Image (cartoon, rainbow, N blue to C red; front, side):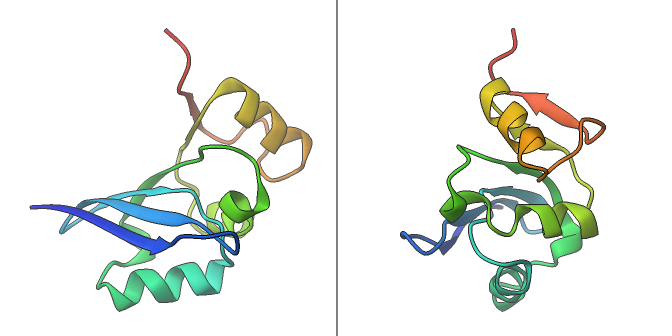
Length: 105
């Protein structure tokens, strides 16, 4: 069964879980790691069940918990090349972090 669970939405943070009853991805992590994990667990989703994180853009309300989440759960990152490059420059991810560029052919 598919699951679509908005965790946060607004200027103070955005994040959505998209997946199944056993695993899925997060679209953006705009709140702290602790707040994101709490929201996931309230919906019976373990942070360990996240298989990737997709980032729409680099505004803090979409990325503020990203660095810590990826440090504790080193899943692949999906984003545009511009977003990936900006996350590297800003020290949120390293060049070695596994990424999938959403705008590659």
